[in-house]
Image (cartoon, rainbow, N blue to C red; front, side):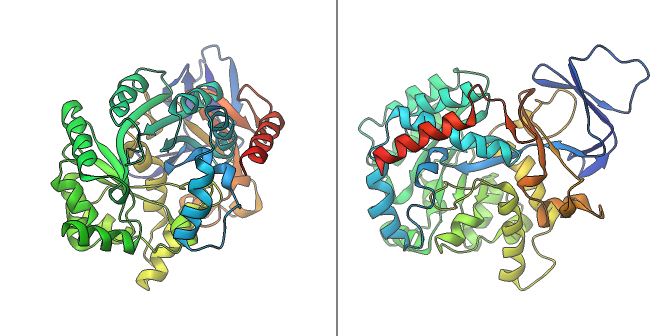
Amino acid sequence: MIRFYNGKVLSFGGGLKITEDEVWVDGSRIVYVGPARAELPPFQRQIDLKGDLLMPGFKDAHTHTAMVFLRSYADDMPLQEWLYDKVFPHEAKLTPEAIYTFTRLGILEYLSSGITASFDMYYHNEAYAKANVDSGFRTVICSAMNDFDADPTNIEREFLRFNDYHELVSYRLGIHAEYTTSRQRMEYMASLAEKYQAPCYMHCAETKSEVEGCVERYGLTPPQLLDRMGLFRYGGGGFHCTWMNDEDIALFARKGIYAITNPASNLKLASGIAPVDQMLSAGVPMAIGTDGAASNNALDMFREMYLASCLQKVSRNDAAAGKAENILTMACVGGARAMGLNDCDDIAEGKLADLVVIDLHRPNMQPVNNIAKNLVFAGSKENVRLTMVNGRVLYEKGAFFVGEEPEEIYRQAAALNRSIL
């Protein structure tokens, strides 16, 4: 067992609260949360928090991990030129080996940012899943059905395979987006959602042109079309949700469909600002993702939280908008539940031990007036002291414990990058 003691614990059960409890981890689970005890069982390790904060890990609820290979390669370009001239041609060269290595590189960045799980939509899922398992990292794979798939029926085979692959890996149904997927293929995806009574996810209302094109083709916005076709019958979520009208928001709220905002990517690609506060007020469940490193360019939840909050303030002309507590809850609890990781959403007995220690003894965390607001408005990756996934410490004080030395992963990634770019 591992004991965390002599610190603060941030949890969300019954509302955000901070206590001075101890937390004990046995295997992959949290087995005790409470005050210090006089009699202690034998521990393999006791971690003195020294006043620092233990909290649930952040969940990156929308990303394309292996896109780290395009980081800072195609910047300052219009969206269509970026996508069709720089991204698609190089993605076509990706091999399983490249996906494996670039994924391992991305995982290092997640860990140093306090992220303990990712919701990934990309290619070569066998290599991707292996990279996560080999690193000890938790992931949820989302299928990306579109018109370029040679065999769309492979989605069903992957759904069955990766939901019985490893305790760190699960799989959700999804299409890439309405504008890349024919009606026939969307209907097939709806049939899978019905067959397995499973939620479905996709890029949704990301850009103004996407929404206008969907209305022109079908007379409906993307959320309305996807719902009409049955893709949301058992829930699911939309990535980005930047251009949502009142009817779209009411639909998401009524059906409990998650809106996963990606503020840094939407800013960098000039896609727009998602109506986060409006969606929260309407009762839409929400989460936060980074999107891929080609359009962000960092896999950094601290930056996402800051932007998610401050963009609401400026877009609504209201400094009280984008409340830090709401944003922090989206990054931890909302992300876990959007991904179906309900055992990873909090610090409580019986939950999975996906945890982060935040160093409060850095200048940007002092004085400690309000920890939640400090995390959102002042926090950074420099404050991540330790990241634990499934009861294993994978990152601590700048060192990684993922089965391979970071420098070797960097070397492999650089060699592959040269061959692709």
